Amino acid sequence: MSLETRASTPDLSVRIGSLRLLSPVLTASGCFGSGKEMSGFTDLHALGAVVCKTVTPEPRAGISPPRAAETPSGMLNAIGLQNPGVRSLRDNDLAWLHERDVPAIASIGGHSVDDYVRCAEVLRGTPGLVAIELNLSCPNLGDRGFMFGLAAERTSEVVRAVRGAVEVPLLCKLSPDVTSLVEIASAAVEAGADGLSLINTTLGMAIDVDSFTPKLSTGTGGLSGPAIRPIAVRCVWQVHRALPEVPIVGMGGIATARDAIEFFLAGATAVAIGTANFSDPRVTQRVADGIAEFCKERGIERLGDIRGKVNAQQ
Image (cartoon, rainbow, N blue to C red):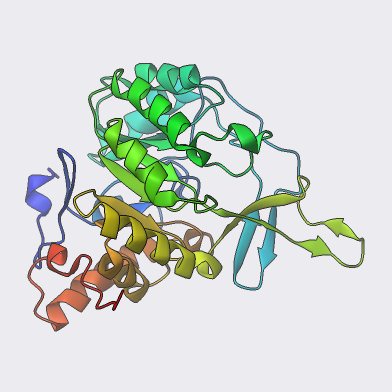
């Protein structure tokens, strides 16, 4: 099925730079495999794109277990970018998605600017690859002080380098754990990013009071799920107010269509669903259907008409 024949009413299509997606619902990297794993549960064609799990230039084994822990309203994880390497993603998962006409966004990470550029160069020209997301904010790298998304200057450096290596739209995935997210977002856009992914997990910790030990092998990890949705909505709202023309993919605790609508009202162009996939592998399609129903019930012809329309007195 071609992209152009999947237009819907109301019009839920969105634009991120030169990229047009026919659905505003994406998958959050790391929570949906690379599409193949979830294809038996949900119609991948109901999604704007599948955002694959972050890859690095070479395969990584990740962090030793325990790597995940439940919390009262979400989960903690410390996976450490376990992945088979960018070439495996290109030759296997991206090829599989392209054969099925499913738009794919690759998420890339690394410890140096050169790591990101190497990944981008491997992916250059890959059929079906519609964009690249730069994971600049993984909370589980050994040296958090080195995390690109913690500083505007380092964010700018890596975005500019990757921008020079590929022509597809670039998204930058940023962390809420900074003093000025707007400053870092602005640096990413000025360096060549076409859009922003907000937010990555936020750093958290859980302790087993029987053993007196942290529940994750690393002590701390990334908190996701409903607990972080208000943080994510706040981040989207703040960045949209400062950069109203910049497309934002909002994510963080989305499990229903109404959750997604909250992000659109805050200023998101599209949304990505992560942790909810672990408890309901059909959640992405259900949210996509629910957004369409929400718009129909209210006579909203274009989803873009409600973007940033929250009536906030600030």
